[in-house]
Image (tube, rainbow, N blue to C red; front, side, top):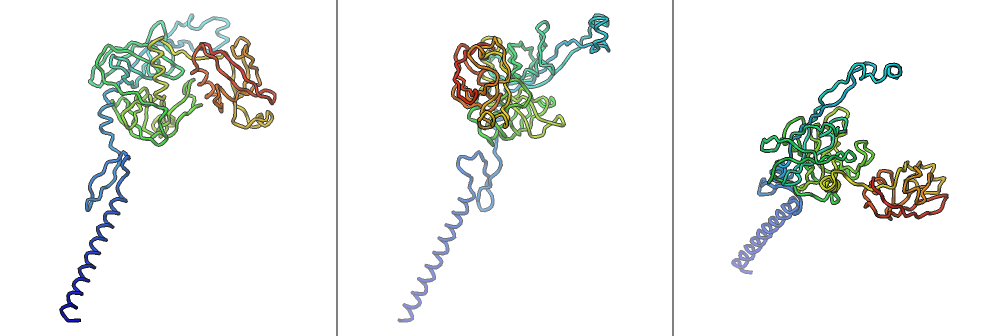
Length: 393
């Protein structure tokens, strides 16, 4: 080979090797960038970092907050309550000889005040809040003298509110204020919530107006919490503190998915466990209070339900955790007239398996008044099917 051809071959070899390095480097950089990029559907914000590689940061809910915060209001309530003025108020000996202590010492009246939050749910002035925000710690409202309720709007206006209705069973209350063209939050479907989904809690904790906190859904369908008679709570770790009651729980799409109701706390402050009434339940309560002034619920009469212990389940040859025990009932109950008896184990309601008393209670109350419910029970080792009419609670 001539020297000229040898030099040309070496140059071609060097050029090919260099081109291979360039192409390989670009492919590797492209793969690294792709590996660090967030999923297309993730609610994340990216900012350019070194060499143009995006850096994943926390979700940005500023636009959601901008739309929803003005729909949450501050609520203050005060009512005159009767308090015992006698040191012998609970003394049966004194009452036996002298009668009612108030007749001797005279009744004492005081003013009970409560503060909380509310959510504007209609442009013409309907505001949803908690019953205990309106009624105070007692949870009861005197029909003789209704509480004086004031609503402070986001634009600093303060207006007197009318009580449309209250529902202590779910700890909800509906107010009406003389205002129009108010901003509202669209209702969300709480049945579609998922554990670990992002949510915002908006309210007025410790009278700090329009506070927003961020967290996730910790659990769904919480019962036996001891907050209200009808329990089906959303649990969240979004910071909820005194004053947040009645405020909005909002999802990442800016929809109302719950009404913040209570906290679990040993100190009185935030400990990462808060509870909210699901929006689907709240929406039904709003509809009934608007139409009837009360919430109408189904009933099968007075029936005492107890959990089914493991020992009892073994004796009855039933799987533990499947069904609840009918402990006692009244003879005038519709369930008794339909054939239910103490000692029966209810295992299904309208085809849905029953696992605890709270679940059965919710199903009965949610049943349409005037309809007939199909209950499946176990009695003396055999299966019994009953048709029970649903009456008004």
